[in-house]
Amino acid sequence: LGLKLQNSLDAAVADGFLDKLNGKYQFCHDRVQETAYKMLSMEDRASRHSRYGLALCRYTLKNINDDAMLFTAVDQVNRGGPHIVSGSDHGSLLAYLNLRAGKKAMDMSDFASALAFFDHGILFLDENHWHDNYNLSLELFDNAVKCTYAIGDHQRLNKFSEQVLSFARSFNDKLTVIYHAVSALCDASSLDEAIEKGVWVLSMLGEDLFQPSSRSETLALIEKTRCLVQGYPEDLLLNYNLMTDSSKIMAMKFLSRLEISLVMGRRGVIPIVTSKMVELSLVHGLTPMSAIGFAYFGSMLASIGHVNEGYRYVKLAKDLVHRFSSKEVAGEVIAIATQTIGYVEPMQTTLEFHMQGHKTALEAGDIRSASLNFNLYCNYLFWCGGNMVNVKTKCEEACLFMKQHKMLAFLLNLRP
Image (cartoon, rainbow, N blue to C red):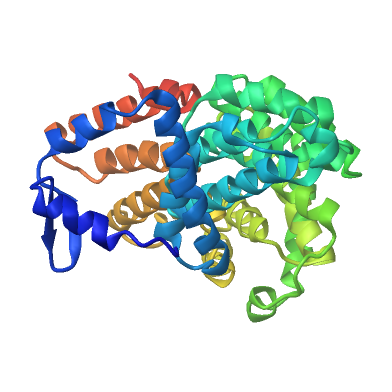
């Protein structure tokens, strides 16, 4: 950092305030550090935190792979506070560094820390940031929304979403926050409102859903989709071209969100959404969300008697998760696919799969799929003849988890 500190540190060691071990310095006692810190005024503390943080930030800009130093630098700057900002460019740089740190924290599945970084990043923006720093502002708010959803803070999710909905320059720029708002509605058991909003977004993206008027029409739609897919060998599907149309990619995200919402409510509509996901995947190419479509498609075929055929497609769905290395969809795919796998493989295998799905979904911040896997694990544990004391304990753990994360739809489904 270009700072000559060794002589001063060695003097502090000689006076008994610091210890030096293997070339590293530390306070000889926590009380010494605490007292030294309290001797500084609030303004002096903020100034020193900021100066130290900014010196470290210069290092992190040159060494982009040093995550530990990035977190330390940004934390020090944040302790200094936004009043240290000397101009809009300075504020934008500190906001950008918070964005970087927040995204790194998200990669580590630490969504609470990531949200704190995004919060501070927003504080460093000037009052005209939506005009002067639109892209940076949008990315900070979008990621803040993702984190508030992951930790179940729906109140703050709505607060951040309002900003984006008010200042976004296009409908497409609003889609990320609408997507998580729809997810939050599902979690709160507001299924009809969630489905209505999801269908509206799909129509805005040019994807209107066919509404069968009878069971025979629904079965005909399933058979039509089945015949369409049968024309594609499994190895071709697994290595199929990728989807590149951004509007279709976003449509697949909303369709996938509708799928899991319908599981808890209007199950009769699932074939419509599933068929649309499979159709878009075959016509426009694959996206990670295609794995969800094929998982539901296989489950749907199994439910009408085509168990072995359904089993093939849910295995394809799991293979697609591996192809894309997508944690975002893994939890939901495991939850849906495993229910069909349980008809072909020993039921005991489902327990391991659902706990894996629960863990993977948590790492991705997908609380809904984590809840669904936990819910299904408890059900299969009972049907596998598990010890009833253990079943009761796991059900209580699942109920507590869902209550803490405001997963009312799944909680109501599990409670007696």
